[in-house]
Amino acid sequence: MPQIVVRRGGWRAALRRYAHVPLLTPAVGLTVAVFWVCMAVLVVMSVYPFLAAGTPRLTLAAWQRLLGDPYYWGVIGTTLRLAFVVTALALVLGYPAAYAISKIQRPGWALAAYVVLFAPILVSVVVRTYGWLLLLSNTGVVNYLLRAAGLIREPIPLIFNETGIVIAMVHILLPFMVFPILSVVGQVGGDLKEAAMDLGANRWVTFRRITLPLTAPGVISGCQIVFTLTISAFVTPFLMGGGRVQILSGLIYRDMEAVNLGFASVVALVLLALAVAILAASNVLTRRTYRRAEVERA
Amino acid sequence: MRPGSRDPVRLALLAFLWLVVAFMLAPIVFTLVFAFSDASYLIFPPPGYSLRWFAKLFEQRALFAAAVNSLVVAIAATLASLVVGTAAAMGLVRYRFFGRELLRTLFLAPLIVPRIAFGVAMLIYAVLLRRFGGLDSLFLAHLMVTLPFAISILTAALVSADRSLEEAAADLGAPPLVTFWKVTLPQIRTGLAVSGFFAFIVSWDQVETSLFLVKTDNMTLPVAMFYYLQRQQDPVIAALSALLIGVAVVGAVIAVLTVNPRDLQRVLSAGGR
Image (tube, rainbow over the protein chains, first blue to last red):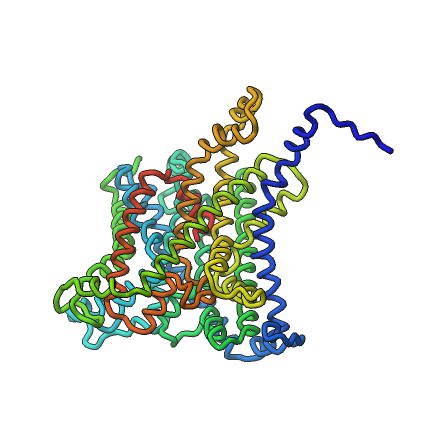
């Protein structure tokens, strides 16, 4: 039998070597027992929709219902279209805003800009959506101002349609576009730009060949976050859409209200699959931009 | 050739930034205006101004109870994610062992899952375990959302903490717990503050994860507001929003004064909520 030699203080060394086990156990236990079991429950529920009722029977009916009906493909299409538009607009607003913040010379003003862009995150999403209902409804602020300016006679419908959803979503998600870009835009050295200018590149060329490629990782991660958060958002699209625009999260809500747990699970899994696909795509894109940067440097 | 302050491109950029700032502030400012409106419906400009919606707000027992629930769950989720998250981050950063990367993925995966999808799963799980209703299932659901943030922020904080100080303390004979308490913890103070702050905000403002888990007894404030808005849109919600905005402004000031902008950037770049 092999001898087990316990040196003096050996238990201490062992304790130190395996100290990560007690440190990690609570987090692993909780994450597995709650989150990962939940994910498994979702998959099981999508094929055993009557599990909760106590009559488990394997059926793909819920999957067939979603994938076989053009209406649901239309809902997936609307979800993705809205996410594309919101992401594009957030980029168009967010990139120049981040760039401008990095150009502010007085630190006090830069901080103020930071706060204004970041503070809305502290205000509940429900409150901000309510604010947009106040601004955009037929008797709201925007329509009043347009009418007062004599630009319109009849109010323009800005809520209970995709326009309202897009405006409010861009507002809510803009910080998530600005901050990843801001974190890379500051790293673009002035010397690189000056070198390009000295070599005769004009401003636009300098921007396109130096700044844009160097900030691409921030742009990609900002787009990934905004896109993913848009397809998963519920409160804002639901309230701004007023039940007239159906997207995947709205389907989930509808089926949960109807206690249609199997179908809700299927829609939830489709949403999850989309989010994972977007993350994978953005990872591939990021790796490719880094590789291109390395090739150019070589 | 350095672009000066009168440079037209720079001025255009700054003007654009002002527009974006106005866009970001508009719904918040007008919510404040509507909170003092005299009308019981949504109209701009308000026909008059009054405080009656604040008076009516304080009669809403249900909203008050929901606020208390939200506060309890948010505090519990924040404390739990700080304690569990610090331990897990220590384990991930200070030890080398097989499967470390796998564990990291296991911890951070909840960040990718759409909140509403997780909400559906939590409800089914709670029903299967016959634990539907109550604050415990809400607490666990929120913890799953806040813990990944805490772990990722605290991991970054620990990586940048100076390890030689810990080794010096250990060499001088300090027991591991004392070393942790006196040497490690002060170095990750900012990380703790940032992750605690965000855990609280994320839990406090959680709708999608809570939506299916709440009944009348464990209603949370954002879900209660969501249901209220579906029924009616009188300025009671604007008055409540005004109060919440006031609290948020105080929170923002505290955050700006205590948190390093770099940390803030890292959190928001990591996917924010």
